[in-house]
Amino acid sequence: MVVGVERVETETYRQVLSPDLPTQALVIARARILICLLVLLSIYVDPATGGFFGIGPYMLATLAAHLVYGAGAYFRVRRDKVSRVFLEVTAAIDIVFAAILAFFTEGPTSPAFAMFLFAIIATGSWAEFRLRIIVTAVSVFLYLLALFFSEIALSNQLLMRAVYLGIAGYLIDFFGRERDEFEIRVRELESETERQTIARSLHDGFLQALAAISLRLETCRDMLVSDQSSDALAEINEMQTGVVVEFDEVRNYIRALGKRDRRVAPSATSDASTQFRIETAFVARGPLAEHIVQILLEGLRNTQRHARAHFAEIRIEEVGENIRITIDDDGVGFADFNASPWTIASRVAQFGGRLAIRPGASAGAHLEIELPSQS
Image (tube, rainbow, N blue to C red; front, side):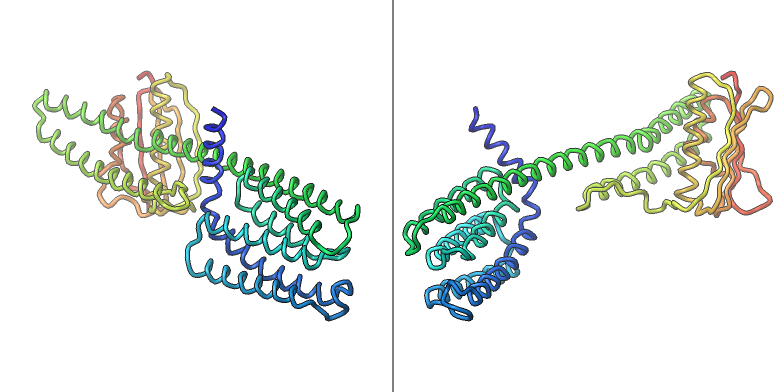
């Protein structure tokens, strides 16, 4: 059971970190070349390794080989897509070079310590917790082994370096694990936010459109029962046009969900620059109040999507025994005064109301709706 849990945990970390592997590999490859050059420079100016601007042949050969290896790894990363196996192999080679360098240069100012730290930090930037612990333990072991076989006499100072290396590796592993858990939590929060956004969009947009279609189909059925076949056919034609529009929006919505950034994109025809002034004051029963709010929402959306207006005003007020809703904007207006917004018209018809597209003193769309307040 424990093995199964560890396997699931490992797969979770891989799923979170895998998309960053190419970028991490490129950063590590660049840092590898840089640290090799810095180590070479530090050895040249260290009097303990042969005097100023002096270096032994074995150290020079080791660093030259490491530089060639680093350059090859860099061009390999730039040219081809890297995998996890590639990063594991390069991590092992980094540790081996650090151990060889420790064998030739160990002393009070040896740069091998920095090479071991580089191997641990580089692994910590992409690997899971268990692999980071393994890399740290192997680094400490090889460091002690290099001390044991080197010609330098062992001292407490050199032995404590191994302890410091283990402590540094543990801290890097600890903060790396915290980073992994933080990234997983961020992904979970992002997914939760996306699900809520999708659910809200489906509920407020497409489900409302389906509800309006259902109401209009009920109206068509009543017309057919009353032998008003021509009016029913006209209503069906309008619904067909509306369904085509909704189908296009659903298709665009699905395509937006399939994009790489996975952010829910607004409608391509929406105009977010429209300024709205909304004034409302009325008393109505729950069902009617809900439909009035939906009419307000539909008017706001239609203005944003189609009107290309700079300013719009929506008023809801009580006039006698009716509730009057007026929607005015300074946009392109309606091409056909008889083609009223079908989603709004279906809600108005359900409660026995009246909808009129009235001419205005200025350009744009001007809707007037009256609903019986006792509906």
